[in-house]
Image 1: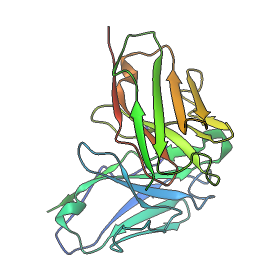
Image 2: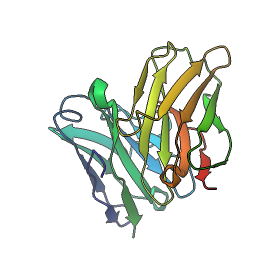
Image 3: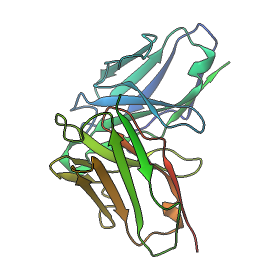
Length: 111
Length: 114
């Protein structure tokens, strides 16, 4: 069982927006602004899409955005495109005892 | 452009030690205050953090693996390494090395089998 809770699946049609949630606790997401999101296509390594809750690395489309409220972080993908179909994982810093925790992953399907 | 590459045996026998090395190129492992991590992914399953280290050797390990894991760094070779002892079939996975909030290696499939 993963430390962070994500819905197993999400879907949307091309052009629509979809939001994926990631729920933690006051020991991780609720306390630290160190939430990251990764995109993983089948057979490939994960790719960083968002770090520090809402920051986009260079080269990541601005269709991807991140936010946080309380113990829950969210990834929103706007203007869905076929290439956005992938697994998405959230992760958070969790203090010196646990350091890093992952979500179980969400499979995003573009209908 | 920072790149990471995992290397090591693809097959390990049960009860033996899994050893992998991550070679960092395109940048120094001693740069800034970054942490470097090992993450694994069993076939068909999600990502699991194994442990992290910084260039001065400060380490953090997953509580569930702590008793079996050692991560070390060799700044002269711009590498960091993973050792996981007493492996079982449950340790079969793709092992990734990565910089925290940065690029990942392509992954190394390690199978535990006799």
